Length: 89
Image 1 (tube, rainbow, N blue to C red):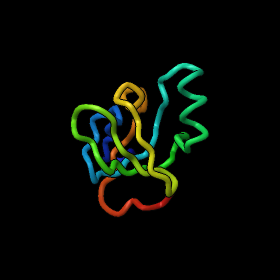
Image 2 (image 1 turned 45 degrees about the vertical axis):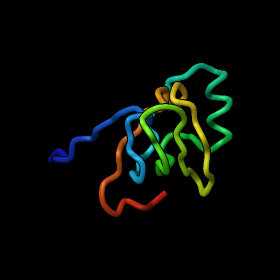
Image 3 (image 1 turned 30 degrees about the horizontal axis):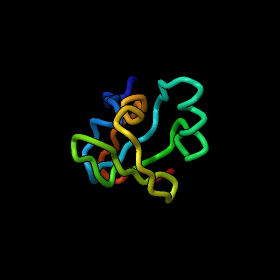
Image 4 (image 1 turned 90 degrees about the horizontal axis):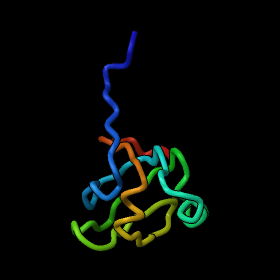
């Protein structure tokens, strides 16, 4: 039997402040990956968007660290929004 949940994936830049998501894909080249991976942006990592004003940089918390990302960087991070109490890391 198939799982009835539909997994929605979107760019990190589209996630609103206060919402949580899980990293599903990094679309950037080697330069971007070499910046994001050491900061904790790895597949499956849980993050929370602290601030996303719709323009300019986003502020996210990932692995107990707050990080500011440019909108272009956030556009290259594909996430799956988390609903409810999905708090495991």
